[in-house]
Image (tube, rainbow, N blue to C red; front, side):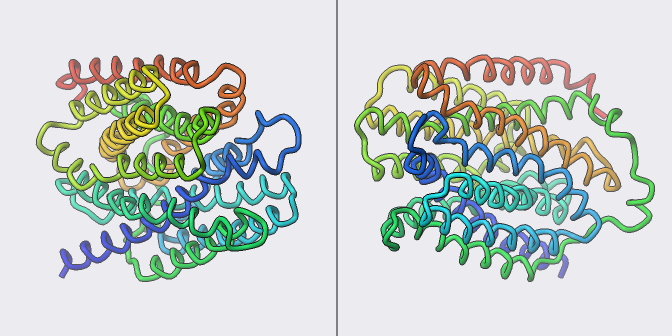
Length: 394
């Protein structure tokens, strides 16, 4: 009976992940372009709405984790979905009215929704046994494969639904957010009891000094930063090279497939080869994508480069999340998960704020070169951790 309950929760969490990433991929495909349309001057700020979405997501992660630690995952996810629905409605209105500042505020609300939804993977970890944890995380992330098909497709087919271009995309996202609230209402995941919340476990400073914690955060955080930075500016770079919106949406679609299709096997790979080796392979794949991007600006270069960095991100993010779950006790999970995601999304938000300006000022090749040091840091620290793993084992 317990196994049946776990499978049900994983299926529902995967469905929620699919809906969540459908909205995210649709926004990624459209927000930078909408920002450029609404801005009369200084197109360098065209990625600001998407950047503010990342900022809001970062600021939401820690309080969202503490909130769910108190009221439970289900109510927490429903709260986030309702905030997202308001953001979708406000985004559609901002586009129709041509109000850039209002569109930025709407992006922040959808970012708050994202801040809640990134805990779907931790909800899966909570529901699984220690041996099955990496696979549970991976299976839930695999739900995003459907988003790779639905998100950009939704954007392409709703871009002209309303008289004002792109407003229909955000109007349709309201239904997606409400669907998340509906599906998540059937999930039952245990939460920390009152005694665990009272004790709180070790201090965050003690936990954060663990080598496992440091490597987990570096791998997931820097890997996500490199991936999101390049993904954010790709539609702009492709437009500058003469490609259409449809072309860039197909590249984003393939990129998201690269991010999540491996999730069907990443958990098995971690079990088979170990978390450290998967982290190293993930870093190498990200580095390979940089080489592909620097070798040319054809459609194939954009496509292959983003697919490779998507797969690399999947390995880094899944393995990093799995490693993080080994660093805390049940009474400590809310604050540790919150700190981890705050670091990840905080780092990404800084990159997202700068991405548009960097792309417009120094170009696509320079953007890729700026990412190289981060990949090197992840690779070297992970190799160091693998070499010292026997000493660092609990």
